Length: 211
Image 1: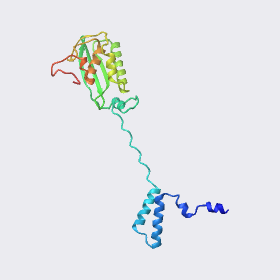
Image 2: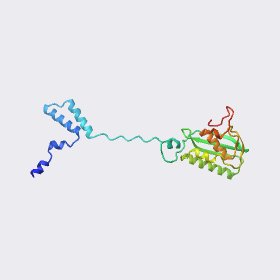
Image 3: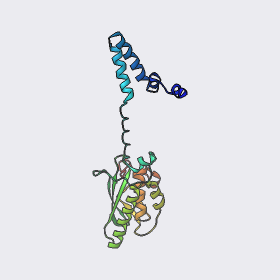
Image 4: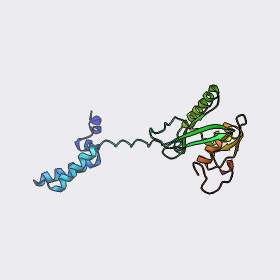
């Protein structure tokens, strides 16, 4: 029993297990009470001890900034995910003819100016060809919005050969095209990637979109 009593911590030893600011505040308050006064210093120590015993909850980290485009998402190290275009967006409408077939190319851009969608329409062609071309444009747009770089599409489809083809009018940088698809991706490469190698030199003031 004697050994157990010796091992049992007393009141002063028990206080030593508390937070150090609280022990200091108790010591100052005890000294002030002995003198019959509780000065401002003792009150300040008590407030500090109370703050140390009950710290404020940690503030939540601000939510990460959402990328404005797939290009920004790649730069931020994010995985592939679809980033939709803003409701109001910029782009260009380009009218031209390829082999006497009128063609309209319309684009939609993200806030940072990168390409996010492509629409293609043609006149004087069959319904089946127009439908396939429209679906092809939708597939390309879907890929762009999921982070496929435009460079991949340009490198893959420039040089594609099929009819209609031939002389191009309405787009000064391109004078001939091997196909509609060849023309579309040369236009996009010039406008958004500044690929001057995809076109021909033009007179000043006759540049197309993106130049």
